[in-house]
Amino acid sequence: MREIEVDRGGRVLRARDAGNPGGPGVVYFHGTPGSRLDLSFDEQVVADSGVRLVSFDRPGYGGSTPAPFGLASIAADAHAVAGALGLARFATLGVSGGGPGALAAATVPGSRVSRVGVVSGAAPLQHVPGALDSLDDNDRVALALLASDPAGAAAVFAAGFEPLADLARDPDGPGVASALAGLLSSRDGELLADRRRAAAFEESTREALRQGTSGSGWDNVSWIGEWDIDLSAVRCPVLLWYGSDDKLAPPEYGQYLAQHLPQAQLVVRDGEGHMGLFEHLGEILGELTRPGPGVP
Image (tube, rainbow, N blue to C red):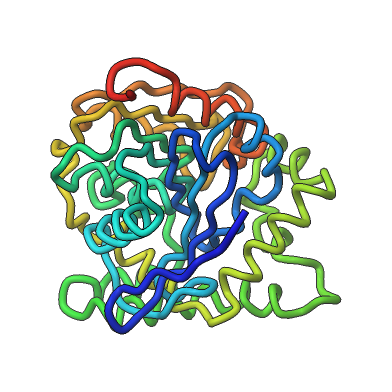
């Protein structure tokens, strides 16, 4: 494993390069909030899969310079990271708020993205019936600003993450997972009862928020607002995994994406929630990199 900084002209992106250096590449997009450390909970699985896994912090997260962003700019950042690491062709994998970024990378011309994987990923909330009803009062204020003042909306969205940032900064507190207790399924609770997984989740979230909450604010602008990418431009195969009991990214999100992507396969796992990547990482990496259409 190594970490590098990729120059983006006045700002940097912090990236993590793990797994088999000669294996098929997968570029990972972390959650909201999240960081390049998201999948550090089991890098042995990554090594066993034979995959080269590249993760990077979006602007304002972890070690990356804060900056405004949308899905199209995140796609450009991902290709810049891949280029800096010599990945001519790669799959993408996004979880939760990182799902839209994984899709966005596949809209960049040039056919460098072989497959896309989305786990419990956000959909265009403006177009999924009832999706905006789940927003809290703070996010509704931000929503009203989106069209006229994206920076103002980002600031309001970011303020909503401050209680989580306070938990992340308190080494003696109940931990960031406590803030999600009412939103997680029973299966998610079982997965986070594992100390190794829980510790990795806490570490990644602390790293995500160590500069503050601006990254989370712009994340919400990028996918709660109108998406600045065209899903019909994703021409490679897309694999979608959702949990039937997920309250944060319900199966309806996956159904919307499956209906609006040219080549999509949706799997809804019965009884699972938002944390399915914890127990299915090896399988997912295998599906994204197995030989077949779109993969050399």
